[in-house]
Length: 594
Image (cartoon, rainbow, N blue to C red; front, side, top):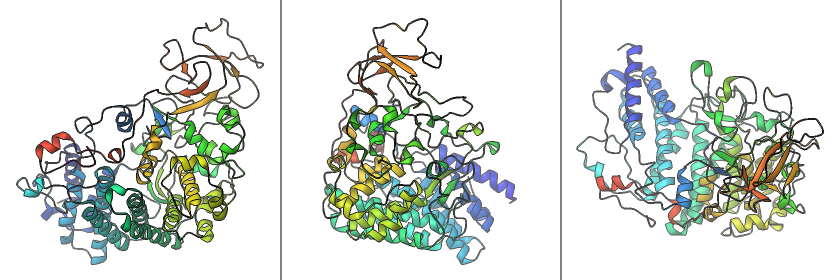
């Protein structure tokens, strides 16, 4: 079989699997011939590359609906919090085609005429994918049927019940530990999977499982949490000790963090463990053009308040911080804040002067720049995205040790404080953190106890700031049993009343907020630079005459919704199996009150 024919067959196979993902669908046996395909290293590489293409890594749009990002979109989380969720109207996630593709490879790769090291390398990559696939299922459903083989149409296992979480998780970690042992060390920082990517995934999943078991009493697995936390710390430390990675830091605290997310080429970045490479000319684009503007998502005041001051003190400790205006709240803050969001004085590409935020109803007023390519090329779609980065490894290491109760100041210096050094923040001091606990974070996470309580809170703050908008927030809240945080109303910028406001930080007024019942003057009033003011009509939420909604009508926080948000514990930490799947397989039983 010629290599071009193999490519066509494989692409057809992958496309079929991607489009026909129903649980009961099985691989048509005539779509790809194992006898004619799995013979050479090139065959194995071609198939594995196909699995990677389907994976779809890389987005800055995954936190919508959390306490970090308000949204106008009909995302699942928002529908659960404000609606009447059930197995009839929540149908995502119960798809198995990708698992079928992975298991098909694992059943056939061993016949290839290649050396054992090469075989184990490709087996490791396939098992990496299977571990990643199954842990996503565990995060969503907990107990799920476990399949380590492809299924025929008459296979009785098609109708098996859920397997226990403990059994599935053990299988997941068997796979990822094998991957970390056998995948080649080469290709770090590219799209190719390396030993280091496997170690990072191992550390990530073990941290999730360890903290989940520690904080979720409904599972009754608290006594096993430390096993996974130690596994997480060990994997992270092995990656750290390799010497292959470092925090990207050129000594420019006002730009280094932002450069991580706005570079065309990330393959030589010392912080990159795994990269999704995008190239407009090759028609491989990221789709991240929507991160800037009022497409659906807008950051919340809660996320803004999380960032420390530049001197390391808490923003909430500043007198009057609750009613700081836009220009005030960005002054002297953690530089990551202004490298993640539009700040007063930010200049948009191809514009002659500072950008004035454009307000709209149902939005918070804050604009995202993380992942936005502020140049005149590529339409924000051609720059690479780091999907596994060393910064997360360091955060994982610190958190795992803190939860184990074995964290030392030296550990913090080797992890969290390297991230702080990049942006010029003072070091996190363990003694001070445990002695001066933030009452706001404490109220969000009341189930944290012990001598390391304060430093756990500060590690969580650091994680929220460092990984903001990178799609970690929801599952962080889930594993910490902190879903009640999601009940808080999502609000944005604060305006003390009607009047004129400077939005660029130059002392010159740019906008005028008037009552929704008032008329915009004609001609419009001009500021001291001779530029027309931009007018907004303020009103309470739902006021049809208003162009922005404020919590108090003519003053207060910009408000995106007034829906009552309810989080039922422990039910909403899990998702139901879709009702139609229960009808197909009555042995599948809902759990946790679904």
